Length: 321
Length: 260
Image 1: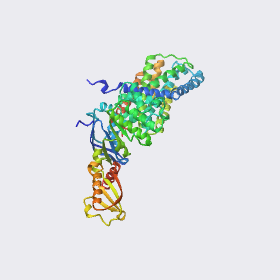
Image 2: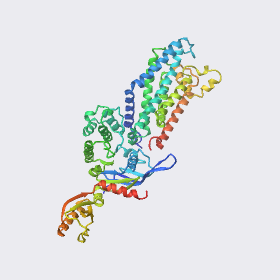
Image 3: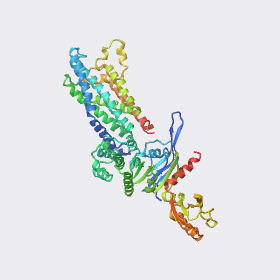
Image 4: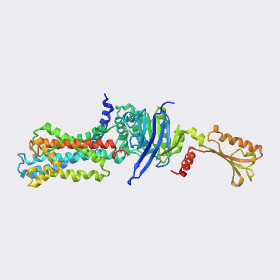
Protein backbone atom coordinates (compact mmCIF):
# COMPACT_ATOMS: atom_id res chain seq x y z
CA UNK A 1 0.00 0.00 0.00
CA UNK A 2 1.30 3.49 -0.81
CA UNK A 3 2.28 5.91 1.95
CA UNK A 4 -0.67 7.77 3.46
CA UNK A 5 -1.31 11.25 2.08
CA UNK A 6 -1.94 12.45 5.63
CA UNK A 7 -0.61 10.86 8.77
CA UNK A 8 -1.63 11.97 12.25
CA UNK A 9 0.18 10.49 15.20
CA UNK A 10 -0.44 10.94 18.92
CA UNK A 11 -2.33 14.18 18.33
CA UNK A 12 -3.75 15.83 21.44
CA UNK A 13 -5.30 19.22 22.01
CA UNK A 14 -6.17 20.63 25.38
CA UNK A 15 -8.01 23.95 25.48
CA UNK A 16 -7.02 25.85 28.57
CA UNK A 17 -9.99 26.77 30.71
CA UNK A 18 -10.62 30.00 32.65
CA UNK A 19 -9.61 28.39 35.94
CA UNK A 20 -6.64 26.53 34.54
CA UNK A 21 -8.57 23.32 33.96
CA UNK A 22 -8.34 22.20 30.37
CA UNK A 23 -10.83 20.64 28.00
CA UNK A 24 -9.27 17.73 26.15
CA UNK A 25 -10.67 18.12 22.65
CA UNK A 26 -8.32 15.56 21.08
CA UNK A 27 -6.84 12.66 22.97
CA UNK A 28 -3.88 10.88 21.39
CA UNK A 29 -5.40 10.60 17.92
CA UNK A 30 -3.72 8.36 15.35
CA UNK A 31 -5.11 8.46 11.83
CA UNK A 32 -3.82 7.75 8.32
CA UNK A 33 -5.62 8.97 5.22
CA UNK A 34 -5.08 7.20 1.89
CA UNK A 35 -4.64 9.01 -1.37
CA UNK A 36 -7.80 9.30 -3.44
CA UNK A 37 -10.27 8.14 -0.81
CA UNK A 38 -13.31 9.78 0.72
CA UNK A 39 -12.98 9.50 4.46
CA UNK A 40 -15.95 10.32 6.67
CA UNK A 41 -15.35 11.37 10.23
CA UNK A 42 -18.44 10.75 12.30
CA UNK A 43 -19.07 11.87 15.81
CA UNK A 44 -21.59 13.61 18.04
CA UNK A 45 -21.39 17.33 18.78
CA UNK A 46 -18.21 18.26 20.63
CA UNK A 47 -16.49 15.01 19.66
CA UNK A 48 -13.44 16.82 18.31
CA UNK A 49 -14.09 16.64 14.55
CA UNK A 50 -13.61 20.35 13.86
CA UNK A 51 -10.62 20.55 16.21
CA UNK A 52 -8.98 17.70 14.31
CA UNK A 53 -9.52 19.48 10.99
CA UNK A 54 -8.33 22.75 12.52
CA UNK A 55 -5.12 21.13 13.72
CA UNK A 56 -4.31 19.88 10.22
CA UNK A 57 -5.27 23.14 8.52
CA UNK A 58 -3.36 25.46 10.84
CA UNK A 59 -6.30 26.92 12.76
CA UNK A 60 -5.56 25.08 15.98
CA UNK A 61 -2.20 24.64 17.71
CA UNK A 62 -1.87 21.01 18.79
CA UNK A 63 -0.79 20.39 22.37
CA UNK A 64 1.22 17.36 21.30
CA UNK A 65 1.61 14.93 18.43
CA UNK A 66 2.75 15.11 14.84
CA UNK A 67 0.96 15.69 11.56
CA UNK A 68 2.59 14.76 8.26
CA UNK A 69 0.98 15.71 4.96
CA UNK A 70 2.45 14.78 1.58
CA UNK A 71 5.57 13.67 3.42
CA UNK A 72 6.11 17.08 5.05
CA UNK A 73 5.93 17.71 8.78
CA UNK A 74 3.25 20.38 9.21
CA UNK A 75 5.05 21.90 12.19
CA UNK A 76 8.21 22.69 10.25
CA UNK A 77 7.47 22.47 6.52
CA UNK A 78 3.97 23.91 6.63
CA UNK A 79 4.16 26.08 3.52
CA UNK A 80 4.46 23.32 0.95
CA UNK A 81 1.87 21.13 2.68
CA UNK A 82 -0.72 23.86 3.23
CA UNK A 83 -0.48 24.87 -0.44
CA UNK A 84 -1.99 21.46 -1.28
CA UNK A 85 -4.73 21.42 1.35
CA UNK A 86 -8.17 23.01 0.99
CA UNK A 87 -10.73 23.67 3.69
CA UNK A 88 -14.46 24.25 3.53
CA UNK A 89 -15.42 25.42 7.03
CA UNK A 90 -18.59 24.57 8.83
CA UNK A 91 -19.65 28.18 9.29
CA UNK A 92 -20.65 30.32 6.31
CA UNK A 93 -17.64 32.57 6.77
CA UNK A 94 -16.92 34.79 3.82
CA UNK A 95 -16.79 38.46 2.91
CA UNK A 96 -20.47 39.02 2.22
CA UNK A 97 -19.88 42.25 0.27
CA UNK A 98 -17.43 40.65 -2.16
CA UNK A 99 -18.55 39.28 -5.51
CA UNK A 100 -18.34 35.55 -6.13
CA UNK A 101 -15.69 36.00 -8.84
CA UNK A 102 -13.44 38.21 -6.74
CA UNK A 103 -13.78 36.03 -3.65
CA UNK A 104 -12.75 32.89 -5.52
CA UNK A 105 -9.95 34.67 -7.39
CA UNK A 106 -8.66 36.04 -4.10
CA UNK A 107 -8.47 32.54 -2.64
CA UNK A 108 -6.36 31.37 -5.58
CA UNK A 109 -3.95 34.28 -5.18
CA UNK A 110 -3.79 33.85 -1.41
CA UNK A 111 -2.49 30.34 -1.92
CA UNK A 112 0.22 31.71 -4.17
CA UNK A 113 -1.10 30.69 -7.58
CA UNK A 114 -1.10 32.88 -10.69
CA UNK A 115 -4.49 34.15 -11.86
CA UNK A 116 -6.27 31.67 -14.13
CA UNK A 117 -9.63 32.90 -15.37
CA UNK A 118 -10.35 29.69 -17.25
CA UNK A 119 -9.81 27.61 -14.11
CA UNK A 120 -12.01 29.88 -11.99
CA UNK A 121 -14.71 29.74 -14.65
CA UNK A 122 -14.52 25.95 -14.70
CA UNK A 123 -14.89 25.78 -10.91
CA UNK A 124 -17.81 28.19 -10.86
CA UNK A 125 -19.58 26.37 -13.69
CA UNK A 126 -19.06 22.99 -12.01
CA UNK A 127 -20.72 24.34 -8.87
CA UNK A 128 -23.54 26.07 -10.82
CA UNK A 129 -22.31 29.49 -9.71
CA UNK A 130 -21.30 30.93 -13.06
CA UNK A 131 -24.52 32.90 -13.47
CA UNK A 132 -23.89 34.47 -10.07
CA UNK A 133 -20.23 35.34 -10.58
CA UNK A 134 -20.85 39.09 -10.39
CA UNK A 135 -23.30 38.91 -7.50
CA UNK A 136 -22.31 39.91 -4.01
CA UNK A 137 -22.17 36.87 -1.78
CA UNK A 138 -24.71 38.35 0.63
CA UNK A 139 -27.31 38.20 -2.17
CA UNK A 140 -27.01 34.42 -2.53
CA UNK A 141 -29.05 31.69 -0.87
CA UNK A 142 -27.54 29.59 1.93
CA UNK A 143 -26.86 26.68 -0.40
CA UNK A 144 -25.11 28.94 -2.90
CA UNK A 145 -23.01 30.53 -0.16
CA UNK A 146 -21.84 27.09 0.86
CA UNK A 147 -20.95 26.34 -2.75
CA UNK A 148 -18.97 29.58 -2.87
CA UNK A 149 -16.97 28.29 0.09
CA UNK A 150 -16.35 25.06 -1.80
CA UNK A 151 -15.30 27.07 -4.89
CA UNK A 152 -12.89 29.12 -2.75
CA UNK A 153 -11.40 25.93 -1.34
CA UNK A 154 -11.00 24.49 -4.83
CA UNK A 155 -9.48 27.64 -6.32
CA UNK A 156 -5.93 26.53 -5.56
CA UNK A 157 -6.59 23.01 -6.82
CA UNK A 158 -5.90 21.16 -3.55
CA UNK A 159 -4.96 17.50 -3.46
CA UNK A 160 -6.50 17.09 -0.03
CA UNK A 161 -9.83 18.70 0.76
CA UNK A 162 -11.49 19.01 4.13
CA UNK A 163 -15.23 19.47 4.19
CA UNK A 164 -16.49 20.29 7.66
CA UNK A 165 -20.20 19.50 7.72
CA UNK A 166 -20.58 20.43 4.03
CA UNK A 167 -24.30 19.87 3.91
CA UNK A 168 -25.29 21.25 7.31
CA UNK A 169 -28.44 23.29 6.98
CA UNK A 170 -28.83 22.45 3.31
CA UNK A 171 -32.14 21.12 2.02
CA UNK A 172 -32.46 17.55 0.74
CA UNK A 173 -32.35 18.49 -2.94
CA UNK A 174 -29.21 20.59 -2.60
CA UNK A 175 -27.61 18.00 -0.36
CA UNK A 176 -27.94 15.43 -3.11
CA UNK A 177 -26.43 17.92 -5.56
CA UNK A 178 -23.48 18.42 -3.25
CA UNK A 179 -22.94 14.71 -2.86
CA UNK A 180 -22.65 14.52 -6.63
CA UNK A 181 -20.15 17.38 -6.61
CA UNK A 182 -18.07 15.76 -3.87
CA UNK A 183 -18.07 12.51 -5.85
CA UNK A 184 -16.93 14.43 -8.93
CA UNK A 185 -14.07 15.97 -6.94
CA UNK A 186 -12.89 12.55 -5.90
CA UNK A 187 -13.13 11.39 -9.52
CA UNK A 188 -10.74 14.22 -10.40
CA UNK A 189 -8.21 12.75 -8.00
CA UNK A 190 -8.76 14.75 -4.82
CA UNK A 191 -8.64 13.05 -1.45
CA UNK A 192 -11.58 14.14 0.67
CA UNK A 193 -12.12 14.14 4.39
CA UNK A 194 -15.59 15.09 5.47
CA UNK A 195 -17.23 15.41 8.81
CA UNK A 196 -20.93 15.00 8.97
CA UNK A 197 -23.90 14.57 11.21
CA UNK A 198 -25.80 12.89 8.40
CA UNK A 199 -24.82 9.27 8.63
CA UNK A 200 -26.68 8.67 5.40
CA UNK A 201 -24.08 10.95 3.83
CA UNK A 202 -21.19 8.85 5.10
CA UNK A 203 -22.94 5.63 4.17
CA UNK A 204 -23.51 6.86 0.64
CA UNK A 205 -20.17 8.50 -0.07
CA UNK A 206 -17.35 7.31 2.11
CA UNK A 207 -14.80 4.64 1.33
CA UNK A 208 -13.70 4.58 4.94
CA UNK A 209 -15.30 5.78 8.12
CA UNK A 210 -13.79 6.95 11.37
CA UNK A 211 -15.86 7.36 14.50
CA UNK A 212 -14.71 9.89 17.05
CA UNK A 213 -16.08 10.57 20.51
CA UNK A 214 -14.69 12.76 23.29
CA UNK A 215 -11.54 13.38 21.26
CA UNK A 216 -10.77 9.72 20.79
CA UNK A 217 -10.99 7.74 17.59
CA UNK A 218 -13.17 4.77 18.47
CA UNK A 219 -12.68 2.97 15.20
CA UNK A 220 -11.50 3.42 11.64
CA UNK A 221 -12.36 0.93 8.96
CA UNK A 222 -13.62 0.47 5.43
CA UNK A 223 -17.28 1.25 5.36
CA UNK A 224 -18.08 -2.17 3.90
CA UNK A 225 -16.03 -3.87 6.58
CA UNK A 226 -17.83 -1.99 9.35
CA UNK A 227 -21.15 -2.99 7.90
CA UNK A 228 -20.00 -6.61 7.67
CA UNK A 229 -18.53 -6.91 11.10
CA UNK A 230 -20.83 -4.72 13.10
CA UNK A 231 -24.03 -4.76 11.12
CA UNK A 232 -26.87 -7.16 11.76
CA UNK A 233 -30.02 -8.47 10.15
CA UNK A 234 -33.37 -8.50 11.88
CA UNK A 235 -36.19 -10.60 10.46
CA UNK A 236 -39.71 -10.69 11.94
CA UNK A 237 -41.80 -13.63 10.79
CA UNK A 238 -45.51 -13.38 11.52
CA UNK A 239 -46.73 -16.88 12.42
CA UNK A 240 -50.01 -18.40 11.24
CA UNK A 241 -50.36 -20.11 14.66
CA UNK A 242 -48.79 -18.80 17.88
CA UNK A 243 -45.99 -20.77 19.52
CA UNK A 244 -45.36 -21.32 23.24
CA UNK A 245 -41.60 -21.57 22.81
CA UNK A 246 -38.93 -21.59 20.13
CA UNK A 247 -38.81 -25.18 18.83
CA UNK A 248 -35.63 -27.13 19.69
CA UNK A 249 -35.16 -27.92 15.99
CA UNK A 250 -34.51 -24.20 15.39
CA UNK A 251 -31.95 -23.83 18.21
CA UNK A 252 -29.12 -23.10 15.73
CA UNK A 253 -30.82 -19.77 14.82
CA UNK A 254 -30.74 -16.67 17.06
CA UNK A 255 -34.50 -16.58 17.62
CA UNK A 256 -36.87 -15.09 20.14
CA UNK A 257 -40.63 -15.02 20.27
CA UNK A 258 -42.54 -11.77 20.05
CA UNK A 259 -46.12 -10.54 20.32
CA UNK A 260 -47.10 -13.33 22.74
CA UNK A 261 -45.76 -16.04 20.46
CA UNK A 262 -47.40 -14.70 17.33
CA UNK A 263 -44.07 -13.70 15.73
CA UNK A 264 -40.63 -15.18 15.53
CA UNK A 265 -37.79 -12.69 15.63
CA UNK A 266 -34.37 -13.41 14.18
CA UNK A 267 -31.38 -11.17 14.99
CA UNK A 268 -27.91 -12.02 13.79
CA UNK A 269 -25.51 -12.34 10.91
CA UNK A 270 -23.86 -9.50 9.05
CA UNK A 271 -25.55 -6.78 7.15
CA UNK A 272 -24.03 -7.98 3.88
CA UNK A 273 -25.58 -10.98 2.22
CA UNK A 274 -22.18 -12.62 1.95
CA UNK A 275 -21.94 -12.56 5.71
CA UNK A 276 -24.93 -14.82 6.04
CA UNK A 277 -27.51 -12.55 7.64
CA UNK A 278 -29.99 -12.71 4.80
CA UNK A 279 -28.77 -16.14 3.76
CA UNK A 280 -29.44 -17.40 7.26
CA UNK A 281 -32.97 -16.03 7.16
CA UNK A 282 -33.49 -17.97 3.90
CA UNK A 283 -32.31 -21.16 5.63
CA UNK A 284 -34.60 -20.38 8.56
CA UNK A 285 -37.65 -20.13 6.32
CA UNK A 286 -36.83 -23.50 4.81
CA UNK A 287 -36.41 -24.99 8.28
CA UNK A 288 -39.80 -23.57 9.35
CA UNK A 289 -41.49 -25.18 6.37
CA UNK A 290 -39.69 -28.47 7.05
CA UNK A 291 -40.98 -28.38 10.66
CA UNK A 292 -44.49 -27.54 9.49
CA UNK A 293 -44.51 -24.08 11.06
CA UNK A 294 -46.52 -21.81 8.82
CA UNK A 295 -45.99 -18.05 8.60
CA UNK A 296 -47.98 -15.30 6.91
CA UNK A 297 -45.44 -12.50 6.56
CA UNK A 298 -41.79 -11.67 6.80
CA UNK A 299 -40.11 -8.33 7.39
CA UNK A 300 -36.30 -8.14 6.97
CA UNK A 301 -34.22 -5.12 8.03
CA UNK A 302 -30.45 -4.72 7.72
CA UNK A 303 -28.90 -2.35 10.24
CA UNK A 304 -27.59 0.87 8.74
CA UNK A 305 -24.37 2.69 9.50
CA UNK A 306 -26.51 4.92 11.68
CA UNK A 307 -27.60 1.95 13.81
CA UNK A 308 -23.97 0.89 14.14
CA UNK A 309 -22.87 4.42 15.00
CA UNK A 310 -25.56 4.86 17.62
CA UNK A 311 -24.81 1.43 19.12
CA UNK A 312 -21.09 2.12 19.19
CA UNK A 313 -21.31 5.60 20.66
CA UNK A 314 -23.98 4.70 23.21
CA UNK A 315 -22.05 1.55 24.24
CA UNK A 316 -18.95 3.66 24.87
CA UNK A 317 -21.12 6.23 26.58
CA UNK A 318 -21.76 3.68 29.30
CA UNK A 319 -18.04 3.10 29.77
CA UNK A 320 -16.10 5.42 32.04
CA UNK A 321 -14.53 8.21 29.97
CA UNK B 1 20.39 28.96 -0.67
CA UNK B 2 16.78 29.09 0.41
CA UNK B 3 14.45 30.28 -2.38
CA UNK B 4 12.48 33.44 -1.68
CA UNK B 5 9.23 31.61 -2.39
CA UNK B 6 9.93 29.26 0.53
CA UNK B 7 9.89 32.15 3.02
CA UNK B 8 7.78 34.78 1.26
CA UNK B 9 5.09 34.34 -1.35
CA UNK B 10 4.78 37.50 -3.43
CA UNK B 11 1.47 36.48 -5.00
CA UNK B 12 -0.10 35.83 -1.60
CA UNK B 13 1.06 39.20 -0.28
CA UNK B 14 -0.17 40.96 -3.44
CA UNK B 15 -3.58 39.26 -3.17
CA UNK B 16 -4.07 40.45 0.41
CA UNK B 17 -2.80 43.94 -0.45
CA UNK B 18 -5.06 44.28 -3.48
CA UNK B 19 -8.13 43.03 -1.66
CA UNK B 20 -7.57 45.36 1.29
CA UNK B 21 -7.24 48.33 -1.04
CA UNK B 22 -10.39 47.33 -2.88
CA UNK B 23 -12.19 47.03 0.44
CA UNK B 24 -11.25 50.64 1.11
CA UNK B 25 -12.54 51.67 -2.29
CA UNK B 26 -15.87 50.05 -1.45
CA UNK B 27 -16.08 52.40 1.49
CA UNK B 28 -14.41 55.36 -0.22
CA UNK B 29 -16.76 57.89 1.33
CA UNK B 30 -15.91 56.80 4.84
CA UNK B 31 -12.24 56.05 4.14
CA UNK B 32 -11.27 59.12 2.15
CA UNK B 33 -13.97 61.75 1.85
CA UNK B 34 -14.79 61.83 5.53
CA UNK B 35 -11.24 62.62 6.80
CA UNK B 36 -10.74 65.08 3.94
CA UNK B 37 -13.93 66.90 4.91
CA UNK B 38 -12.92 66.97 8.59
CA UNK B 39 -9.45 68.30 7.78
CA UNK B 40 -10.89 70.92 5.45
CA UNK B 41 -13.07 72.17 8.29
CA UNK B 42 -9.95 72.50 10.46
CA UNK B 43 -8.27 74.51 7.70
CA UNK B 44 -11.27 76.76 7.30
CA UNK B 45 -11.72 77.39 11.03
CA UNK B 46 -8.14 77.38 12.35
CA UNK B 47 -6.22 78.09 9.20
CA UNK B 48 -8.25 80.74 7.42
CA UNK B 49 -10.64 82.33 9.93
CA UNK B 50 -8.70 82.20 13.23
CA UNK B 51 -5.29 81.87 11.56
CA UNK B 52 -5.71 85.23 9.87
CA UNK B 53 -5.64 86.88 13.34
CA UNK B 54 -2.67 84.86 14.65
CA UNK B 55 0.99 85.79 14.69
CA UNK B 56 3.33 83.61 12.58
CA UNK B 57 4.96 80.75 14.53
CA UNK B 58 8.72 80.27 13.99
CA UNK B 59 8.41 82.48 10.92
CA UNK B 60 5.63 80.34 9.39
CA UNK B 61 2.09 81.65 8.94
CA UNK B 62 -0.30 80.04 11.40
CA UNK B 63 -2.39 78.45 8.65
CA UNK B 64 0.69 76.76 7.17
CA UNK B 65 2.08 75.94 10.64
CA UNK B 66 -0.84 73.64 11.49
CA UNK B 67 -0.66 71.62 8.23
CA UNK B 68 1.87 68.99 9.47
CA UNK B 69 -0.07 68.54 12.73
CA UNK B 70 -3.42 68.17 10.96
CA UNK B 71 -1.83 65.78 8.50
CA UNK B 72 -0.44 63.76 11.39
CA UNK B 73 -3.84 63.79 13.12
CA UNK B 74 -5.52 62.23 10.10
CA UNK B 75 -2.64 59.93 9.25
CA UNK B 76 -2.40 58.39 12.72
CA UNK B 77 -6.14 57.94 13.08
CA UNK B 78 -6.78 56.55 9.64
CA UNK B 79 -3.81 54.18 9.34
CA UNK B 80 -4.50 52.80 12.81
CA UNK B 81 -8.21 52.37 12.12
CA UNK B 82 -7.76 50.91 8.63
CA UNK B 83 -5.22 48.39 9.73
CA UNK B 84 -7.02 47.39 12.91
CA UNK B 85 -10.32 46.91 11.07
CA UNK B 86 -8.50 45.03 8.31
CA UNK B 87 -7.45 42.23 10.65
CA UNK B 88 -10.24 42.52 13.24
CA UNK B 89 -13.08 41.99 10.76
CA UNK B 90 -11.82 38.60 9.49
CA UNK B 91 -11.44 37.55 13.13
CA UNK B 92 -14.94 38.79 13.92
CA UNK B 93 -16.64 37.22 10.88
CA UNK B 94 -14.58 34.02 10.91
CA UNK B 95 -13.07 34.56 7.45
CA UNK B 96 -9.61 34.51 9.02
CA UNK B 97 -9.74 30.71 8.65
CA UNK B 98 -8.68 31.18 5.05
CA UNK B 99 -5.63 33.27 5.92
CA UNK B 100 -4.58 30.85 8.65
CA UNK B 101 -4.98 27.79 6.45
CA UNK B 102 -3.07 29.35 3.53
CA UNK B 103 0.68 28.99 3.01
CA UNK B 104 1.08 32.53 4.30
CA UNK B 105 3.38 33.73 7.07
CA UNK B 106 3.94 36.92 9.00
CA UNK B 107 5.76 38.56 6.06
CA UNK B 108 2.96 38.22 3.53
CA UNK B 109 0.34 39.15 6.13
CA UNK B 110 2.12 42.34 7.11
CA UNK B 111 2.94 43.38 3.55
CA UNK B 112 -0.69 42.76 2.61
CA UNK B 113 -2.63 44.26 5.50
CA UNK B 114 -0.14 46.85 6.75
CA UNK B 115 1.02 47.77 3.24
CA UNK B 116 -2.56 48.44 2.16
CA UNK B 117 -3.31 50.49 5.27
CA UNK B 118 -0.11 52.50 4.77
CA UNK B 119 -0.96 53.05 1.09
CA UNK B 120 -4.38 54.34 2.04
CA UNK B 121 -2.69 56.66 4.53
CA UNK B 122 -0.40 58.00 1.83
CA UNK B 123 -3.26 58.56 -0.60
CA UNK B 124 -5.09 60.38 2.15
CA UNK B 125 -2.04 62.50 2.97
CA UNK B 126 -1.70 63.50 -0.69
CA UNK B 127 -5.39 64.45 -0.87
CA UNK B 128 -5.18 66.47 2.35
CA UNK B 129 -2.11 68.35 1.16
CA UNK B 130 -3.89 69.03 -2.11
CA UNK B 131 -6.94 70.23 -0.21
CA UNK B 132 -4.77 72.52 1.96
CA UNK B 133 -3.64 74.46 -1.10
CA UNK B 134 -7.22 75.76 -1.43
CA UNK B 135 -7.04 77.38 2.01
CA UNK B 136 -3.41 78.11 2.85
CA UNK B 137 -0.22 79.11 0.99
CA UNK B 138 2.62 76.80 1.90
CA UNK B 139 5.80 75.29 0.48
CA UNK B 140 7.47 72.06 1.54
CA UNK B 141 11.14 72.67 2.23
CA UNK B 142 12.29 69.04 2.17
CA UNK B 143 9.74 67.28 -0.05
CA UNK B 144 11.57 63.92 -0.29
CA UNK B 145 12.14 63.85 3.46
CA UNK B 146 8.45 64.69 3.94
CA UNK B 147 7.37 61.81 1.72
CA UNK B 148 9.76 59.45 3.49
CA UNK B 149 8.65 60.56 6.93
CA UNK B 150 4.96 60.26 6.06
CA UNK B 151 5.62 56.74 4.74
CA UNK B 152 7.49 55.83 7.91
CA UNK B 153 4.72 57.11 10.17
CA UNK B 154 2.04 55.46 8.01
CA UNK B 155 3.85 52.10 8.17
CA UNK B 156 4.47 52.40 11.93
CA UNK B 157 0.87 53.19 12.82
CA UNK B 158 -0.46 50.60 10.40
CA UNK B 159 1.60 48.07 12.35
CA UNK B 160 0.26 49.51 15.58
CA UNK B 161 -3.28 49.22 14.22
CA UNK B 162 -2.62 45.62 13.26
CA UNK B 163 -1.67 44.85 16.87
CA UNK B 164 -4.76 46.71 18.04
CA UNK B 165 -6.94 44.65 15.68
CA UNK B 166 -5.49 41.45 17.13
CA UNK B 167 -5.80 42.61 20.72
CA UNK B 168 -9.37 43.88 20.49
CA UNK B 169 -12.17 41.45 21.17
CA UNK B 170 -14.95 43.97 20.69
CA UNK B 171 -15.74 46.96 18.49
CA UNK B 172 -15.58 49.14 21.57
CA UNK B 173 -11.96 48.19 22.24
CA UNK B 174 -11.19 48.69 18.57
CA UNK B 175 -12.36 52.29 18.67
CA UNK B 176 -11.16 53.20 22.13
CA UNK B 177 -7.44 53.60 21.40
CA UNK B 178 -7.74 56.03 18.45
CA UNK B 179 -10.53 57.94 20.17
CA UNK B 180 -9.20 58.17 23.72
CA UNK B 181 -5.47 58.17 23.12
CA UNK B 182 -4.32 58.98 19.59
CA UNK B 183 -6.57 61.98 18.92
CA UNK B 184 -6.03 63.71 22.30
CA UNK B 185 -2.29 63.04 22.22
CA UNK B 186 -2.03 64.46 18.70
CA UNK B 187 -4.01 67.55 19.71
CA UNK B 188 -1.71 68.00 22.69
CA UNK B 189 1.39 67.09 20.68
CA UNK B 190 1.88 70.49 19.11
CA UNK B 191 -0.60 70.28 16.24
CA UNK B 192 -1.90 73.80 16.86
CA UNK B 193 1.05 75.32 18.73
CA UNK B 194 4.79 75.08 19.22
CA UNK B 195 5.55 73.09 22.37
CA UNK B 196 8.32 75.53 23.22
CA UNK B 197 5.64 78.22 23.58
CA UNK B 198 4.00 76.33 26.43
CA UNK B 199 4.62 77.97 29.81
CA UNK B 200 7.10 76.47 32.31
CA UNK B 201 6.54 72.89 33.35
CA UNK B 202 3.85 72.27 30.69
CA UNK B 203 6.52 72.31 28.02
CA UNK B 204 8.42 69.50 29.83
CA UNK B 205 5.21 67.51 30.37
CA UNK B 206 4.34 67.89 26.68
CA UNK B 207 7.54 66.05 25.74
CA UNK B 208 6.28 63.00 27.61
CA UNK B 209 3.83 62.70 24.73
CA UNK B 210 5.54 60.59 22.03
CA UNK B 211 3.32 62.02 19.31
CA UNK B 212 4.87 65.45 19.92
CA UNK B 213 8.07 64.04 18.41
CA UNK B 214 6.19 62.85 15.32
CA UNK B 215 4.51 66.20 14.73
CA UNK B 216 7.80 67.98 15.29
CA UNK B 217 9.61 65.69 12.84
CA UNK B 218 7.04 66.20 10.12
CA UNK B 219 7.06 69.95 10.71
CA UNK B 220 10.83 69.97 10.19
CA UNK B 221 10.42 68.28 6.77
CA UNK B 222 7.87 70.98 5.86
CA UNK B 223 9.47 74.16 7.18
CA UNK B 224 12.94 73.29 8.52
CA UNK B 225 11.94 74.28 12.06
CA UNK B 226 10.98 71.90 14.84
CA UNK B 227 10.60 71.63 18.62
CA UNK B 228 13.09 68.73 18.80
CA UNK B 229 15.89 67.54 16.53
CA UNK B 230 14.74 65.66 13.42
CA UNK B 231 17.12 62.86 14.43
CA UNK B 232 15.36 62.47 17.75
CA UNK B 233 12.04 62.31 15.94
CA UNK B 234 13.41 59.78 13.46
CA UNK B 235 14.89 57.69 16.26
CA UNK B 236 11.59 57.66 18.14
CA UNK B 237 9.65 56.70 15.01
CA UNK B 238 12.04 53.92 14.00
CA UNK B 239 12.05 52.67 17.59
CA UNK B 240 8.24 52.51 17.59
CA UNK B 241 8.28 50.73 14.22
CA UNK B 242 10.78 48.14 15.49
CA UNK B 243 8.74 47.60 18.65
CA UNK B 244 5.58 46.98 16.62
CA UNK B 245 7.38 44.54 14.28
CA UNK B 246 8.75 42.69 17.32
CA UNK B 247 5.32 42.42 18.95
CA UNK B 248 3.74 41.15 15.73
CA UNK B 249 6.50 38.59 15.17
CA UNK B 250 5.89 37.35 18.73
CA UNK B 251 2.13 37.16 18.12
CA UNK B 252 2.61 35.08 14.98
CA UNK B 253 5.08 32.81 16.71
CA UNK B 254 2.77 32.10 19.62
CA UNK B 255 -0.49 32.30 17.67
CA UNK B 256 -1.96 34.64 20.30
CA UNK B 257 -5.49 35.72 19.26
CA UNK B 258 -4.97 34.00 15.93
CA UNK B 259 -4.83 30.26 16.48
CA UNK B 260 -6.76 28.46 19.19
